[in-house]
Amino acid sequence: MAAMVEEPLYPIAVLIDELKNDDVQLRINSVRRLSTIARALGEDRTRRELIPFLADGSDDDEEVLLAMAEELGNLVPYVGGVEYAHSLLPPLEALCDVEESAVREKAVASLCKIASVMNERDLVEWFAPVVKRLAAGEWFTARVSVCGLLHIVYPSAPELLRAELRTIYNQLSHDDMPLVRRAAISNLGKFAATIEPAFLKTDIMAVFRDLTQDEQDSVRLLAVEGCAALGRLLQTSDCIACVLPLILNFSQDKSWRVRYMVANQLYELCETVGPECTRVDLVPAYVRLLRDNEAEVRIAAADKVTKFCEIVQPEIAMQSILPCVKELSLDSSQHVRAALASVIMGMAPVLGKDATIEQLLPIFLALLKDEFPDVRLNIISKLDQVNKVIGIDLLSQSLLPAIVELAEDKHWRVRLAIIEYIPLLASQLGVEFFDDKLGALCMHWLGDQVCSIREAAANNLKRLTEEFGTEWACRHIIPQVLEMINNPHYLYRLTILYAISLFAPVVGSEVTCQMMLPVVINAAKDRIPNVKFNVAKILQSFIPIVGSEVVEQSIRPCLVELSEDPDVDVRYFANQALQSCEQAMSM
Image 1 (cartoon, one colour):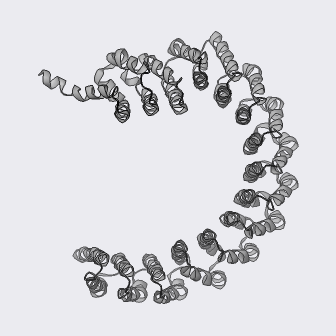
Image 2: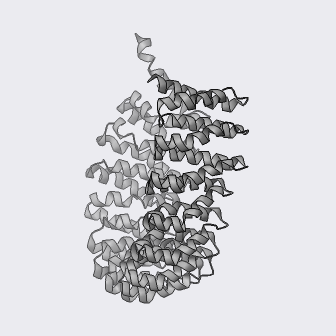
């Protein structure tokens, strides 16, 4: 009987032993199964033995510590539930002081997870002392960690403890170590969200103003994000009085990294300060960023140009921002032009039809002819946004010649982007315009030197068939495609077979049997094995489409012949297809 009781505990004993094993991987595996160990030990022994063992900090391997920091956050049910959740705090407190930042971050996350289920009394009694000890830690690592915990305990704290926590945050914000100050400013938004409005405007704003003037640009650039977080918490009038001056100073900061952050965040502040301050203060600041000396800042500013235009009135966008956009379209940095090209199409709905035709179209055309392929690519991919504003007639007159020119671009990714845009363009142009202007172009791509282009061209023709119908495809597309099966190079013959396999499900049984099946069967006589086994795969795909009579009379004999081919791959795929034939015939 004793043996029956002890046997299930044996694997648990192994897991406990592996916690001390010299092999790192075994220790990691064991830590990952802490919940299993805790379940076997029971709640009491887990609290008395397992948790103190984990808290002694004897392991120094980063991967083990990382796994431990994560698993401890899941052990609340195994230590006796919420009532005893505080017993998990000591090992996590120790992990908050280790050197590896990933371990500390995971430990802080687990502490937050545990705190979320603790009652207010336990938070004050057990969690608050942990926060105080970490804040007073000798090593900066503990002080970095505690910055992410203040917002957890503050809402539950009595008035005296709240004052102490605000003092702690003040001390952390003025710490000698830049990393601690960075952590303080990173967690400002979460902590400020728990602070009473009266202290938010006094204590927190005073600390924040000091951080915005920090000597380290790594601290100041995080303070830019703090501006947005505080702006959402303050009333509009307080935001204008307290936060707006800081943002304007940041927009002219000596460090380009700080100005870069402002360019990324500025449009979010417009809604906070209201339309008047946006027009008077933030628009001039944004214009300065669009004309910044550093290309990285111009890239960030250009990337937000459409979002900024959506916030301000169209007249302001026309008057202040559009001249900068014209300058950026001729910027010396190709990356600035690429960033602008990725968003400029979105300005069309904002500015309206007349302004788009008069002001934006010339910029679009200039960017479509840019020497840098990414610029051209970004414009092509967003053409539909302009079409919605100015209409397909004007778009085809102004941009279609440039699109046709790009269809033969030396960079294959540009050609690919054009191909992927063609079905959308075709649906908007209509069948007659397409046949006249773009039909020959689509056929030309089937003979491209790049395989990805040829495959995209085949898919393009399939989508066009779905758009314009089977009758149109039988007259204009399929005959021309089938003629290409005689190309001397086998790779191009493979492309045609691929195109046929795409057409068949779309055009149906009759067209497949009359026009395409004879071509495929004839291709089975090709001298290249790759072509022949692709024929076998295509014939297999035809089986559900054509009738059983066609399968028996035409497809099966061809497959039988291929199943005796000298090439092993051809025989394999032919036999696979024959099995499908048998299954189809037996149904």
